[in-house]
Length: 448
Ligand code: ADP
Ligand code: MG
Image (tube, rainbow, N blue to C red; front, side):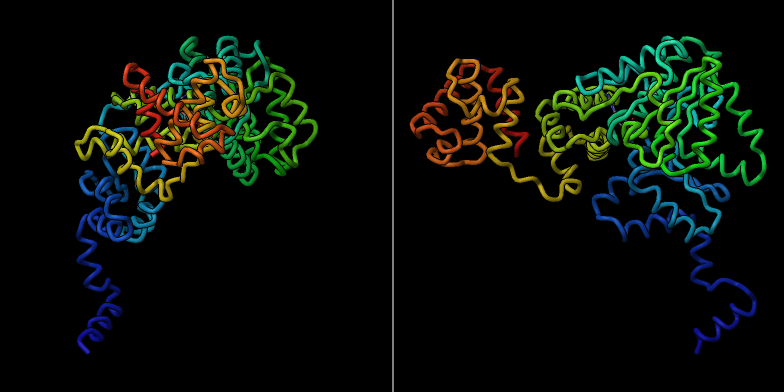
């Protein structure tokens, strides 16, 4: 009865139920945090939200985070649900934002509404066989905008560095000529602005806004697939910039030929200049990127940890960085050095089903490390340059998988006494050669 009476009063006076009123007197963050705590695994919540400071100013709910890495992680993993909770708790106008608790890097003079990310430079881009062609093309465009290759079309899978290179071009052009009118545009933004301008009958302004652009960096152009009006407009934008000798750089998930529903006249424009691809990074490149990124964050990563992380990411560098960010934050917040055990704990929730290592994987790994083919290791060539890596592979399979000697013999088509001899050889060599010992330790650890 009592409850009923109250709710009637509330209805008639248009007031909120008292429980919600009480809640609304709280800082919305207190409520958001307690709701998050219920939703997230304990570790995850403790790590990212338990001790972070927050601010509320009107409808702006700000989370103040200790580093850009931290912000990146929250943005990628939690921002959407934070925003949703904020809307529920605080009201429909709530906006969640992140602020890094350190002076922001200075902004540049780019005309575009989407600024260039100063961290995406050629200096921070780790070169490797998978990206050196695209990188070299990007660099020569940045040194000679409008004259090297026009357009430059970069393509490659997700998370392989296309956006990074695009920003690097913009940053480099501006470093050389701060007055240059560089504009970075995600194609999504191009499409949305176009639609808005059509609706508001502001097409002249739309076109005018691109006219002065001297270097147009259009990201993810594959999304124009099947969008006829966008393609038509982009065709005109492209032509007028190109005729004026202005540089155009495009990125795409696929080569121009594979963008479905692309008008022929546009496709032919895309390949006028140079088409360069970025491929999946080699294992060594992944390691180098990890080391580099860790160093940029002022963080020392032991070798075995680098191998451990690099082995667990297939090819997406964004994922590689995600793992690293988590390790850095985990180790900073828990005050533990990033030893292999700490890293394993930090990543445990991201690696739900640890892959079961197979002999084939170990052989592939060793072959790759020594620049050989799997067939070499399984073959009969007994020159030391091949026999030694083969012995290493045999040793590792024994050490990591504890297979029997005859089982290993079968894999390599060798008598089990040869397998025993191989294992003993490496054990002996390991004792007298500290550098081999360190390498093998890190191999073994990285497979665990
Ligand atoms: P894409 O646009 O191809 O999906 P991004 O350019 O966004 O990929 O790259 C994903 C992340 O990986 C970015 O943080 C970027 O800095 C990083 N990255 C990619 N390639 C490299 C590289 N060669 N060296 C250093 N960082 C890289
Ligand atoms: Mg991208």
